[in-house]
Length: 588
Image 1 (tube, rainbow, N blue to C red):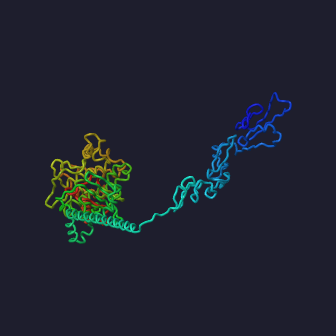
Image 2: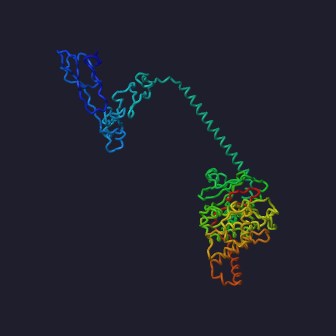
Image 3: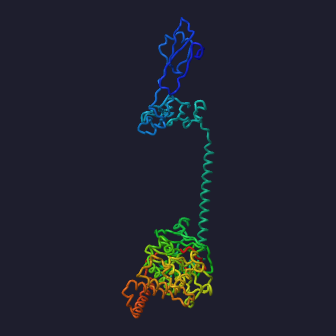
């Protein structure tokens, strides 16, 4: 038994385990001298009391020993107590919870750097170490932060700011040579002026080079010829516009990918917004034939004057690029193909609406073949090249493969162009393109409108993958009703549908000379619609009355399409720029 250690004869100690609720002290001893039969036991806080052998001699004189009273909140752990937000005792924002070491319950403490009562909402407040001087910073170098502090020398002093480091000392400015400063400043300003001036000169040269290049392209692409024509024809060409390259760049956000409407093998179509907030479609092709410039300009001049409600209108062009850009008005409701072959849209195309669309397409093609100053053959009539506006009005579009026909010509010999499933079989055999080739393609579109089938489909038997063959064979076997779109047929329109089917069959005849003209097709379709609107004429109308009705229809049609009766055309169309600007494949 020695000082500080109560282990041995006459003295022993033992710790009280954590978590006990009560205890009893029992002292037993043996071989105790008669002069000192007393025993003592007491509870004392371990860190507050140091054993001394002298305590054994005057134990009776000691009235008290240091003792610490431990306490805790409740009987739950911190984890369980936090679940009950209302009863959770650690209210202060900057406080934490810890479990009691001596039994159940928990206690609260303020975070390091904070002081106060953690059991109150605002009980833990920041300790300003700089004011209490409870820090290790050099003089004037202490910077207080919430919950902490840092040491940094104030402005004009140098050092690390820590008391045990390099203390803050004033910065002594080095003597400067004002003459050298002025020289250095002048050199810097001169270099800056030279740099700005050089950049300005380079930008100017680059801009001038770009302007000259645009002027070169403008002349190469027939810009002067087009300008002269516009000036000579005044009001008749007032709708034709020659756009600058900068205008179209701005309209398409410099031809950003997000503006792409479609891409084909020969170029891209972008959506643009002009300065007057008008939406347009801009075709940017890749291939250009310089030998066809004059023909290209003539076609642009002619096509910009077309003003038919069912033909999308060419607004103008840009000639300042290597390949001319063509600008059209924009149509938002997609292609006829989208509406026919998308099952969710097809149901909205009733028989009446399909007949109306067929009539409008026929009107447009008849107008192009017969009513323009030079007949125009489209050469790529298909459902993806028929656009619909918000009222489901048909607009014939994409004249990228079309050609003008001189008045003394009836056919064009050309390379095979167009789309499989719509191509005139006679076109493959002779290499000669006539207006009847458009009639054949229109016949395929009519079959699509009636059946909802695609022009080429692997879902049909091998011998009937081609819709024209499948449609003709079905009519021959008198099975038309088996292939019609279900929702367009009712008891009242079976006969008109059969009439349209027979008209499609006539358009799909193998020999072009056996097919009707587009004008005849438009007249017959108009007559059918009039008959549907006036059912009183179906049963008892005489042959004489029918002929009169058709003659009346012919007159009405000539007035409508010959005058190009629409003033508000909603889209634009391409020229037959087959040799100069190649067509896209996306139907835009």
